[in-house]
Image (cartoon, rainbow, N blue to C red):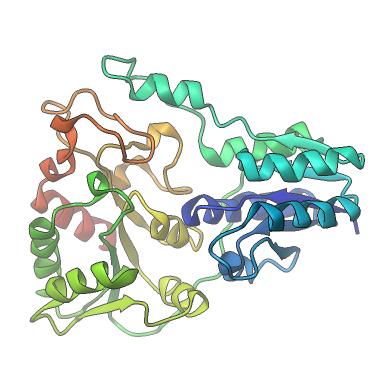
Length: 332
């Protein structure tokens, strides 16, 4: 069976966004296999895709030294992949693809649209533009390698739990503060939801800081649970796949939930889906944005860092009642 090597090393959200692309590719080319070069910790995301094999670049290590990278590149090039698709285009992947080129691999590279994105986030830039999605940019790499296909609405299988509860995931954290709804407002949303006794709410996060904040968010609410560093990724994905709704900042958990066809309500801050990072197959109505009358220059960041001071807390202009009402609308 012919094999295509695909490289995407990080981050969690960007790697998770490969799933609908791979599923759509498999629909068009059922006899082809994908060998994905990525971080070992991301392997469970693709566990249900039998046509995808994981070639871990790090073997669980968080840091990848130059020596180990070159050794990996040499071993990869010796396997002489016919097609190598670089969906990351960073220094590490350039090393890998250039070694493979020397051995005759046909290399196709993602166009991240860096200049377009820079222009869109510029103050007084043209904010009306909607850029190509990351999903389509991934597909374009396959197309350039000679494998055209269209994105399809195909999802991973959910975990069905038969009872009368509504399961809501809350993912209130992000890498950058400008993408996190304030603690006070988040707590108000959770308290409103916790008043519904048929709602089971789970807060998702990672690390000590987020765990401590989550304890305060969940205080005095027996139907609010915390899932932070209590499960491995396989177990966490099973939990996510049982949800009726994921409420997420612009972060990885929203993409993980969308892969199962679960409704995702995204709370946007200084970033915006028009930059191409919206969750898969979700209507724009499942997004809430800061008040554009106060913050007319949004988006002002691609990833949430290096933002104008006046826009740091733009996300808090989103009304608690609007979030609560949208959650009820999606659930009912």
